[in-house]
Image (cartoon, rainbow, N blue to C red; front, top):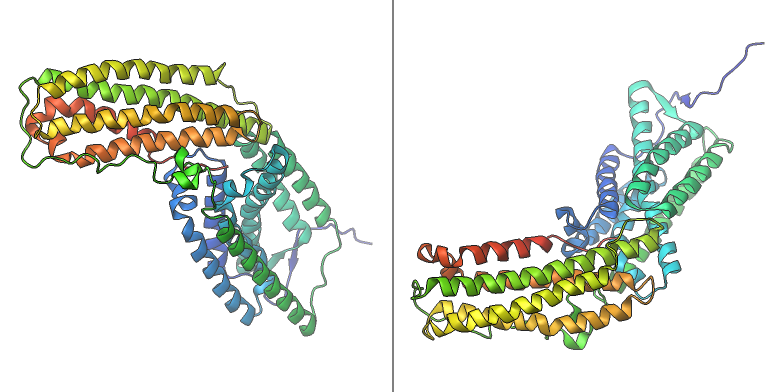
Length: 443
Protein backbone atom coordinates (compact mmCIF):
# COMPACT_ATOMS: atom_id res chain seq x y z
CA UNK A 1 0.00 0.00 0.00
CA UNK A 2 1.38 3.42 -0.96
CA UNK A 3 0.94 6.36 1.37
CA UNK A 4 -0.67 9.46 -0.09
CA UNK A 5 -0.29 13.08 0.95
CA UNK A 6 -2.74 15.90 0.52
CA UNK A 7 -1.51 18.73 -1.69
CA UNK A 8 -3.17 22.12 -2.14
CA UNK A 9 -3.35 21.68 -5.91
CA UNK A 10 -5.38 19.59 -8.28
CA UNK A 11 -4.64 18.85 -11.91
CA UNK A 12 -7.51 19.43 -14.31
CA UNK A 13 -7.80 18.08 -17.79
CA UNK A 14 -10.04 21.05 -18.76
CA UNK A 15 -9.50 24.68 -17.97
CA UNK A 16 -11.84 25.64 -15.13
CA UNK A 17 -14.10 28.63 -15.40
CA UNK A 18 -12.24 31.53 -13.83
CA UNK A 19 -12.75 35.28 -13.36
CA UNK A 20 -11.28 37.27 -16.27
CA UNK A 21 -7.86 38.79 -15.71
CA UNK A 22 -9.13 42.35 -16.37
CA UNK A 23 -11.56 42.03 -13.47
CA UNK A 24 -8.88 40.63 -11.16
CA UNK A 25 -6.44 43.45 -11.94
CA UNK A 26 -8.97 46.32 -11.77
CA UNK A 27 -10.50 44.97 -8.55
CA UNK A 28 -7.05 44.53 -7.03
CA UNK A 29 -6.19 48.17 -7.66
CA UNK A 30 -9.49 49.30 -6.15
CA UNK A 31 -9.15 46.98 -3.14
CA UNK A 32 -5.65 48.18 -2.26
CA UNK A 33 -6.70 51.81 -2.70
CA UNK A 34 -9.67 51.43 -0.34
CA UNK A 35 -7.49 49.62 2.21
CA UNK A 36 -4.93 52.45 2.10
CA UNK A 37 -7.64 55.09 2.51
CA UNK A 38 -9.16 53.23 5.46
CA UNK A 39 -5.97 53.11 7.52
CA UNK A 40 -3.98 56.15 6.38
CA UNK A 41 -4.00 59.66 7.79
CA UNK A 42 -6.45 62.11 6.24
CA UNK A 43 -3.99 64.22 4.24
CA UNK A 44 -3.38 61.85 1.32
CA UNK A 45 -4.34 63.32 -2.05
CA UNK A 46 -5.97 59.96 -2.79
CA UNK A 47 -8.59 60.79 -0.15
CA UNK A 48 -10.19 62.86 -2.91
CA UNK A 49 -11.79 59.54 -3.89
CA UNK A 50 -13.90 59.51 -0.70
CA UNK A 51 -14.34 63.26 -0.37
CA UNK A 52 -15.09 65.59 -3.32
CA UNK A 53 -14.51 62.67 -5.69
CA UNK A 54 -16.92 60.30 -3.98
CA UNK A 55 -19.19 60.53 -7.05
CA UNK A 56 -16.62 58.34 -8.83
CA UNK A 57 -17.91 55.44 -6.75
CA UNK A 58 -21.21 55.65 -8.66
CA UNK A 59 -19.32 55.16 -11.92
CA UNK A 60 -17.74 52.11 -10.27
CA UNK A 61 -21.22 50.77 -9.61
CA UNK A 62 -22.09 51.28 -13.26
CA UNK A 63 -18.92 49.47 -14.29
CA UNK A 64 -19.60 46.43 -12.12
CA UNK A 65 -23.22 46.26 -13.29
CA UNK A 66 -22.14 46.22 -16.95
CA UNK A 67 -19.34 43.76 -16.16
CA UNK A 68 -21.83 41.57 -14.30
CA UNK A 69 -24.13 41.44 -17.32
CA UNK A 70 -21.22 40.38 -19.52
CA UNK A 71 -20.07 37.75 -17.02
CA UNK A 72 -23.60 36.40 -16.65
CA UNK A 73 -23.91 35.94 -20.40
CA UNK A 74 -20.56 34.14 -20.49
CA UNK A 75 -21.53 32.02 -17.45
CA UNK A 76 -18.67 33.37 -15.33
CA UNK A 77 -20.58 35.57 -12.90
CA UNK A 78 -20.78 33.02 -10.08
CA UNK A 79 -17.01 32.47 -9.94
CA UNK A 80 -16.42 36.23 -10.30
CA UNK A 81 -18.98 37.30 -7.70
CA UNK A 82 -16.46 37.88 -4.84
CA UNK A 83 -14.62 40.35 -7.09
CA UNK A 84 -17.73 42.48 -7.48
CA UNK A 85 -17.96 43.20 -3.75
CA UNK A 86 -15.27 45.95 -3.63
CA UNK A 87 -17.16 47.90 -6.29
CA UNK A 88 -20.34 47.56 -4.25
CA UNK A 89 -18.45 48.50 -1.07
CA UNK A 90 -16.81 51.67 -2.41
CA UNK A 91 -19.96 53.91 -2.31
CA UNK A 92 -20.70 52.70 1.23
CA UNK A 93 -17.15 53.48 2.39
CA UNK A 94 -17.46 56.94 0.83
CA UNK A 95 -20.41 57.59 3.16
CA UNK A 96 -18.85 55.84 6.17
CA UNK A 97 -18.77 58.87 8.46
CA UNK A 98 -22.36 59.80 7.65
CA UNK A 99 -23.47 56.24 8.39
CA UNK A 100 -22.03 56.25 11.90
CA UNK A 101 -23.07 59.81 12.78
CA UNK A 102 -25.34 60.16 15.79
CA UNK A 103 -24.77 56.56 16.93
CA UNK A 104 -23.41 55.59 20.33
CA UNK A 105 -19.91 54.15 20.51
CA UNK A 106 -20.80 50.43 20.44
CA UNK A 107 -22.94 50.57 17.26
CA UNK A 108 -20.17 52.69 15.75
CA UNK A 109 -17.65 49.99 16.59
CA UNK A 110 -19.83 47.27 15.10
CA UNK A 111 -20.47 49.09 11.81
CA UNK A 112 -16.86 50.23 11.42
CA UNK A 113 -15.45 46.78 11.99
CA UNK A 114 -17.91 45.11 9.65
CA UNK A 115 -16.82 47.56 6.95
CA UNK A 116 -13.16 47.14 7.85
CA UNK A 117 -13.48 43.35 7.79
CA UNK A 118 -14.76 43.60 4.22
CA UNK A 119 -12.01 46.08 3.31
CA UNK A 120 -9.26 43.82 4.72
CA UNK A 121 -10.75 40.68 3.16
CA UNK A 122 -11.04 42.10 -0.34
CA UNK A 123 -7.31 42.29 -1.26
CA UNK A 124 -6.93 38.75 0.08
CA UNK A 125 -9.75 37.49 -2.16
CA UNK A 126 -8.18 39.23 -5.15
CA UNK A 127 -4.75 37.72 -4.48
CA UNK A 128 -6.23 34.24 -4.10
CA UNK A 129 -8.16 34.66 -7.36
CA UNK A 130 -5.03 35.94 -9.09
CA UNK A 131 -2.98 33.00 -7.80
CA UNK A 132 -5.56 30.56 -9.11
CA UNK A 133 -5.51 32.29 -12.48
CA UNK A 134 -1.72 32.21 -12.76
CA UNK A 135 -1.46 28.57 -11.69
CA UNK A 136 -4.04 27.53 -14.25
CA UNK A 137 -2.35 29.44 -17.07
CA UNK A 138 1.22 28.42 -16.25
CA UNK A 139 0.87 24.79 -15.18
CA UNK A 140 -2.72 23.71 -15.73
CA UNK A 141 -3.14 23.22 -11.98
CA UNK A 142 -5.87 24.73 -9.85
CA UNK A 143 -5.71 25.85 -6.24
CA UNK A 144 -8.25 23.72 -4.37
CA UNK A 145 -10.33 24.87 -1.42
CA UNK A 146 -7.80 23.84 1.21
CA UNK A 147 -4.93 25.51 -0.60
CA UNK A 148 -6.94 28.67 -1.21
CA UNK A 149 -8.00 28.97 2.43
CA UNK A 150 -4.43 28.36 3.62
CA UNK A 151 -3.19 31.15 1.37
CA UNK A 152 -5.99 33.45 2.54
CA UNK A 153 -5.19 32.69 6.19
CA UNK A 154 -1.51 33.52 5.64
CA UNK A 155 -2.37 36.81 3.91
CA UNK A 156 -4.79 37.84 6.66
CA UNK A 157 -2.17 36.97 9.25
CA UNK A 158 0.17 39.40 7.50
CA UNK A 159 -2.56 42.06 7.73
CA UNK A 160 -2.57 41.80 11.53
CA UNK A 161 0.49 44.08 11.63
CA UNK A 162 -1.37 46.65 9.54
CA UNK A 163 -4.39 46.47 11.84
CA UNK A 164 -2.25 46.81 14.96
CA UNK A 165 -0.16 49.65 13.57
CA UNK A 166 -2.93 51.82 12.15
CA UNK A 167 -6.19 50.74 13.81
CA UNK A 168 -6.32 48.91 17.13
CA UNK A 169 -7.05 45.89 19.26
CA UNK A 170 -10.60 45.38 17.99
CA UNK A 171 -9.44 45.09 14.39
CA UNK A 172 -6.76 42.59 15.41
CA UNK A 173 -9.43 40.49 17.13
CA UNK A 174 -11.65 40.83 14.05
CA UNK A 175 -8.86 39.52 11.82
CA UNK A 176 -8.18 36.60 14.16
CA UNK A 177 -11.86 35.61 13.96
CA UNK A 178 -11.75 35.94 10.17
CA UNK A 179 -8.68 33.70 10.02
CA UNK A 180 -10.31 31.05 12.20
CA UNK A 181 -13.43 31.12 10.05
CA UNK A 182 -11.35 30.79 6.89
CA UNK A 183 -9.41 27.82 8.27
CA UNK A 184 -12.61 26.06 9.36
CA UNK A 185 -14.12 26.64 5.93
CA UNK A 186 -11.05 25.07 4.34
CA UNK A 187 -11.49 21.92 6.42
CA UNK A 188 -14.90 21.27 4.88
CA UNK A 189 -15.16 18.70 2.06
CA UNK A 190 -14.31 20.11 -1.34
CA UNK A 191 -16.86 20.70 -4.07
CA UNK A 192 -17.61 18.08 -6.67
CA UNK A 193 -15.20 18.23 -9.62
CA UNK A 194 -17.99 18.86 -12.09
CA UNK A 195 -21.52 20.21 -11.96
CA UNK A 196 -24.53 19.49 -14.12
CA UNK A 197 -25.40 22.30 -16.51
CA UNK A 198 -28.75 22.84 -14.78
CA UNK A 199 -27.14 23.36 -11.38
CA UNK A 200 -24.53 25.66 -12.89
CA UNK A 201 -27.30 27.72 -14.48
CA UNK A 202 -29.07 28.09 -11.13
CA UNK A 203 -25.80 29.24 -9.60
CA UNK A 204 -25.39 31.91 -12.27
CA UNK A 205 -28.94 33.16 -11.73
CA UNK A 206 -28.40 33.25 -7.97
CA UNK A 207 -25.17 35.24 -8.47
CA UNK A 208 -27.03 37.66 -10.72
CA UNK A 209 -29.64 38.17 -8.02
CA UNK A 210 -26.96 38.80 -5.39
CA UNK A 211 -25.27 41.36 -7.65
CA UNK A 212 -28.52 43.22 -8.34
CA UNK A 213 -29.48 43.30 -4.65
CA UNK A 214 -25.98 44.49 -3.75
CA UNK A 215 -26.15 47.18 -6.43
CA UNK A 216 -29.49 48.44 -5.09
CA UNK A 217 -28.28 48.45 -1.47
CA UNK A 218 -25.02 50.20 -2.33
CA UNK A 219 -26.65 52.88 -4.47
CA UNK A 220 -29.44 53.34 -1.93
CA UNK A 221 -26.93 53.78 0.91
CA UNK A 222 -24.92 56.29 -1.10
CA UNK A 223 -27.94 58.39 -2.09
CA UNK A 224 -29.59 58.09 1.31
CA UNK A 225 -26.60 59.33 3.33
CA UNK A 226 -24.97 61.77 0.91
CA UNK A 227 -25.26 65.37 2.12
CA UNK A 228 -27.89 64.56 4.69
CA UNK A 229 -28.72 67.48 7.02
CA UNK A 230 -26.60 67.63 10.13
CA UNK A 231 -23.48 66.00 8.66
CA UNK A 232 -20.33 67.11 10.43
CA UNK A 233 -17.68 65.64 8.16
CA UNK A 234 -14.92 68.19 7.77
CA UNK A 235 -17.38 71.06 7.33
CA UNK A 236 -17.20 74.45 9.01
CA UNK A 237 -19.35 74.52 12.09
CA UNK A 238 -22.10 76.61 10.54
CA UNK A 239 -22.81 73.80 8.06
CA UNK A 240 -23.91 71.66 11.01
CA UNK A 241 -27.12 73.70 11.05
CA UNK A 242 -28.75 73.81 7.58
CA UNK A 243 -30.29 77.19 8.44
CA UNK A 244 -26.80 78.67 8.88
CA UNK A 245 -25.24 77.68 5.56
CA UNK A 246 -25.02 81.34 4.50
CA UNK A 247 -23.28 82.39 7.72
CA UNK A 248 -19.86 82.25 6.09
CA UNK A 249 -17.44 85.07 5.41
CA UNK A 250 -18.58 87.23 2.50
CA UNK A 251 -15.51 87.54 0.33
CA UNK A 252 -17.22 90.23 -1.78
CA UNK A 253 -18.16 92.54 1.09
CA UNK A 254 -15.11 94.73 0.47
CA UNK A 255 -14.30 95.69 -3.11
CA UNK A 256 -10.77 95.96 -4.46
CA UNK A 257 -10.27 99.57 -5.61
CA UNK A 258 -9.27 100.00 -9.24
CA UNK A 259 -5.82 101.18 -10.12
CA UNK A 260 -2.31 99.86 -9.77
CA UNK A 261 -0.95 99.32 -6.25
CA UNK A 262 1.78 101.70 -5.10
CA UNK A 263 4.49 101.53 -2.47
CA UNK A 264 3.03 103.02 0.73
CA UNK A 265 4.50 106.08 2.39
CA UNK A 266 5.13 104.03 5.56
CA UNK A 267 5.98 100.53 4.25
CA UNK A 268 7.20 99.20 7.60
CA UNK A 269 3.94 100.15 9.32
CA UNK A 270 1.87 98.36 6.65
CA UNK A 271 4.21 95.37 6.64
CA UNK A 272 3.95 94.89 10.41
CA UNK A 273 0.15 95.15 10.27
CA UNK A 274 -0.07 92.44 7.61
CA UNK A 275 2.33 90.20 9.52
CA UNK A 276 0.36 90.80 12.72
CA UNK A 277 -2.86 89.54 11.16
CA UNK A 278 -1.06 86.57 9.63
CA UNK A 279 0.50 85.56 12.94
CA UNK A 280 -2.83 85.96 14.72
CA UNK A 281 -4.52 83.49 12.38
CA UNK A 282 -1.52 81.19 12.55
CA UNK A 283 -1.70 81.04 16.36
CA UNK A 284 -5.43 80.37 16.18
CA UNK A 285 -4.72 77.52 13.77
CA UNK A 286 -2.17 76.07 16.20
CA UNK A 287 -4.89 75.88 18.86
CA UNK A 288 -7.41 74.39 16.46
CA UNK A 289 -4.85 71.83 15.30
CA UNK A 290 -4.18 70.70 18.87
CA UNK A 291 -7.90 70.23 19.41
CA UNK A 292 -8.53 68.55 16.05
CA UNK A 293 -5.72 66.01 16.35
CA UNK A 294 -6.24 65.14 19.99
CA UNK A 295 -10.01 64.85 19.68
CA UNK A 296 -9.38 62.58 16.67
CA UNK A 297 -6.89 60.39 18.55
CA UNK A 298 -9.15 60.30 21.61
CA UNK A 299 -12.08 59.16 19.46
CA UNK A 300 -10.00 56.53 17.66
CA UNK A 301 -8.73 55.23 21.00
CA UNK A 302 -12.35 54.66 22.01
CA UNK A 303 -13.53 53.36 18.63
CA UNK A 304 -10.70 50.93 17.86
CA UNK A 305 -9.48 50.26 21.43
CA UNK A 306 -6.03 51.65 20.78
CA UNK A 307 -3.66 53.66 22.95
CA UNK A 308 -2.37 56.66 21.01
CA UNK A 309 -0.78 59.09 23.50
CA UNK A 310 -2.68 62.35 23.94
CA UNK A 311 -1.44 65.78 24.95
CA UNK A 312 -2.26 66.10 28.67
CA UNK A 313 -5.35 68.25 29.19
CA UNK A 314 -5.40 68.90 25.45
CA UNK A 315 -8.65 70.88 25.44
CA UNK A 316 -7.24 73.49 27.81
CA UNK A 317 -3.97 73.56 25.85
CA UNK A 318 -5.74 74.19 22.55
CA UNK A 319 -8.04 76.85 23.95
CA UNK A 320 -5.04 78.54 25.56
CA UNK A 321 -3.50 78.97 22.09
CA UNK A 322 -6.75 80.52 20.88
CA UNK A 323 -6.60 82.94 23.81
CA UNK A 324 -3.00 83.80 22.85
CA UNK A 325 -4.26 84.51 19.34
CA UNK A 326 -6.89 86.83 20.82
CA UNK A 327 -4.13 88.90 22.44
CA UNK A 328 -2.20 88.93 19.17
CA UNK A 329 -5.34 90.15 17.45
CA UNK A 330 -5.55 93.19 19.73
CA UNK A 331 -1.98 94.12 18.80
CA UNK A 332 -2.66 93.44 15.10
CA UNK A 333 -5.75 95.67 15.16
CA UNK A 334 -3.69 98.48 16.69
CA UNK A 335 -1.04 98.10 13.98
CA UNK A 336 -3.77 97.76 11.36
CA UNK A 337 -5.38 101.02 12.45
CA UNK A 338 -2.02 102.80 12.20
CA UNK A 339 -1.37 101.30 8.77
CA UNK A 340 -4.86 102.15 7.58
CA UNK A 341 -4.43 105.77 8.67
CA UNK A 342 -1.27 106.01 6.56
CA UNK A 343 -3.03 104.85 3.38
CA UNK A 344 -5.56 106.68 1.19
CA UNK A 345 -9.04 105.17 0.92
CA UNK A 346 -8.59 104.24 -2.73
CA UNK A 347 -5.40 102.26 -2.13
CA UNK A 348 -5.75 98.47 -2.71
CA UNK A 349 -3.47 97.92 0.30
CA UNK A 350 -6.00 99.74 2.47
CA UNK A 351 -8.75 97.43 1.23
CA UNK A 352 -6.55 94.40 1.97
CA UNK A 353 -6.08 95.53 5.57
CA UNK A 354 -9.83 96.15 5.91
CA UNK A 355 -10.54 92.66 4.58
CA UNK A 356 -8.06 91.05 6.95
CA UNK A 357 -9.46 92.92 9.95
CA UNK A 358 -12.97 91.75 9.04
CA UNK A 359 -11.87 88.17 8.39
CA UNK A 360 -10.00 87.93 11.68
CA UNK A 361 -13.04 89.33 13.51
CA UNK A 362 -15.25 86.74 11.77
CA UNK A 363 -13.07 83.88 12.99
CA UNK A 364 -12.93 85.17 16.55
CA UNK A 365 -16.71 85.51 16.55
CA UNK A 366 -16.81 81.80 15.67
CA UNK A 367 -14.38 80.71 18.40
CA UNK A 368 -16.84 80.82 21.36
CA UNK A 369 -19.37 78.82 19.31
CA UNK A 370 -16.76 76.13 18.66
CA UNK A 371 -15.80 76.03 22.32
CA UNK A 372 -19.43 75.58 23.37
CA UNK A 373 -20.26 72.94 20.74
CA UNK A 374 -17.11 70.90 21.33
CA UNK A 375 -17.73 70.99 25.06
CA UNK A 376 -21.16 69.47 24.47
CA UNK A 377 -19.83 66.85 22.05
CA UNK A 378 -17.02 65.58 24.26
CA UNK A 379 -19.43 64.41 26.95
CA UNK A 380 -19.68 61.01 25.21
CA UNK A 381 -17.02 58.86 23.48
CA UNK A 382 -19.03 58.96 20.24
CA UNK A 383 -19.27 62.74 20.41
CA UNK A 384 -15.49 63.07 20.27
CA UNK A 385 -15.61 62.51 16.50
CA UNK A 386 -17.93 65.51 16.09
CA UNK A 387 -15.61 67.70 18.16
CA UNK A 388 -12.70 66.57 15.97
CA UNK A 389 -14.63 67.20 12.75
CA UNK A 390 -15.69 70.59 14.08
CA UNK A 391 -12.14 71.84 14.56
CA UNK A 392 -10.83 70.17 11.43
CA UNK A 393 -13.56 71.82 9.38
CA UNK A 394 -12.90 75.22 10.90
CA UNK A 395 -9.16 74.82 10.31
CA UNK A 396 -9.73 74.05 6.65
CA UNK A 397 -12.14 76.94 6.33
CA UNK A 398 -9.73 79.33 8.05
CA UNK A 399 -6.99 78.47 5.57
CA UNK A 400 -9.17 78.45 2.47
CA UNK A 401 -10.80 81.76 3.41
CA UNK A 402 -7.43 83.41 3.89
CA UNK A 403 -6.26 81.94 0.58
CA UNK A 404 -9.33 83.44 -1.12
CA UNK A 405 -8.45 86.85 0.28
CA UNK A 406 -4.86 86.58 -0.97
CA UNK A 407 -6.13 85.53 -4.39
CA UNK A 408 -8.59 88.44 -4.40
CA UNK A 409 -5.67 90.85 -3.91
CA UNK A 410 -3.33 89.03 -6.27
CA UNK A 411 -2.41 92.25 -8.07
CA UNK A 412 -1.23 93.67 -4.75
CA UNK A 413 0.70 90.73 -3.33
CA UNK A 414 2.30 89.87 -6.69
CA UNK A 415 3.53 93.40 -7.40
CA UNK A 416 7.36 93.24 -7.35
CA UNK A 417 7.61 96.68 -5.77
CA UNK A 418 5.43 95.54 -2.85
CA UNK A 419 7.24 92.25 -2.18
CA UNK A 420 9.12 93.68 0.85
CA UNK A 421 5.76 94.78 2.29
CA UNK A 422 3.59 91.73 1.54
CA UNK A 423 6.08 88.86 1.16
CA UNK A 424 6.17 87.57 4.74
CA UNK A 425 2.39 87.84 5.13
CA UNK A 426 1.89 85.84 1.92
CA UNK A 427 4.29 83.14 3.19
CA UNK A 428 2.38 82.88 6.48
CA UNK A 429 -0.93 82.69 4.63
CA UNK A 430 0.37 79.95 2.36
CA UNK A 431 1.51 77.84 5.32
CA UNK A 432 -1.89 78.29 7.02
CA UNK A 433 -3.69 77.15 3.87
CA UNK A 434 -1.42 74.19 3.16
CA UNK A 435 -1.73 72.87 6.73
CA UNK A 436 -5.25 71.59 5.97
CA UNK A 437 -5.59 71.90 2.21
CA UNK A 438 -5.69 68.14 1.63
CA UNK A 439 -7.32 66.95 4.87
CA UNK A 440 -10.51 64.94 4.68
CA UNK A 441 -12.15 62.91 7.40
CA UNK A 442 -11.73 59.13 7.10
CA UNK A 443 -12.32 56.28 9.51
